[in-house]
Image (tube, rainbow, N blue to C red; front, side, top):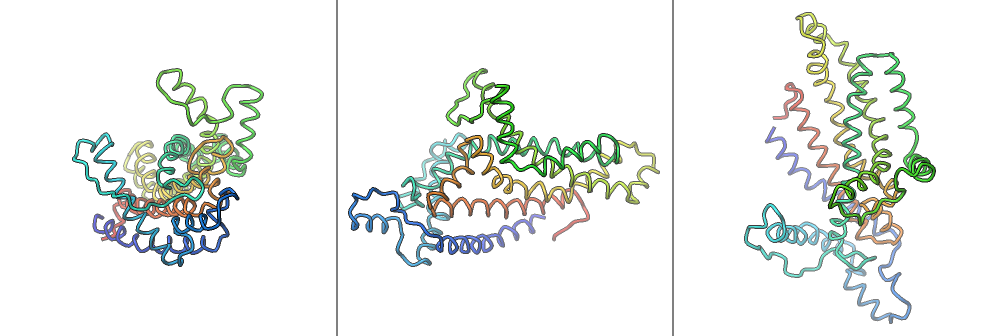
Length: 345
C-alpha cells in the first residue's frame, strides 16, 4: 500500500502540471486587463510599466513558467518561514529566512499576494463548508443504512421523499427561502454571516453558532440527499449476498451482520462519493457563500471572475484541482483498508 501511495503521489505531479497548463492557457484566451480599474488620470506609460511589473505582455509560456516558479518554489519558502517563525507547533525551530523578496503571484484586483488572500478566506470556508459536510455525512450514513435495512417501510419512504426533494432543490432557492422564513418572519437567525465576528466568550460562541446554522443547513441538505441514496443502494446490494446468509446461519447477531460485515463492504463505493465530494462541496459553496455573504473561497472566486482577476482565478482553480487529485488518492487508499481483498502492490 505504501508503494502504491508513493507511486500515485509521483504520478500526480505531471497530472497537476498538465491541468495547470490547460487552465492557464484557457485563461489566456479570456479578456481582461489588470489596468482596467486604474484611474484614467494615470499616464499610459505608467500603466505599461505596471503591466510589465505584473508580468502581462510577455509570451504565454514565459508567464506560465513564472507562475510555476512562484507557486511551487516561492510560496513553499514563505510557508516554511512561517512554520519556523510564527506557527504554534514548529515556532521553536530556528528561523529559516528562505524567502528573499522574490515576486509572488499578485492579484490584479487588490495588488496583493494571492496566497495571502486565500489563507485569509480559508478559515471562513472551513467553518461553514467543512462543518456542513461533516454534518451531512453523519446524518446521511445512518439514514441510508436504516432505510436499506427497513426497505419499503414508512421510514424508508419518508427518507426517500425528503432526500429527493433536498437533491432536487438548488441552494440558490433553499438559501433565500430559509432567510425569508427564519430571518425575516421568525427572526431566529441572522441573514448575513458576519465574518469579522470574534469568538471569545460564551455569548460570542452562541452567536457564531446561530449565524452558521442556515448556511450549514443548506449545504448539509445537499450532502445528505446525495450520500444517503448511495448508502441505501450499496447496503441493499450487499444485504442479499451469500456471505450475509452465511453469517446469519453461523448464529451471528443481526447487529454484527449489518454493522460489521454488510456495512464494511457497502462503504467501498460510498467512500468514493464522500472523498470526491470534498472538492465538489467547495465548488458548490460558491452560491451559498454569496447568498449568506460568507467571506470565503467561493465568494472570492466569484469576485475575481467579475473583476477579470486572472491570477486569482488561476490559483483558486488549481487549488480545486489539487483537492480532486488528493482525495482521489485518499479514496483509493481507504479501499484497501476497508476490503482486504483489494491490493495494489
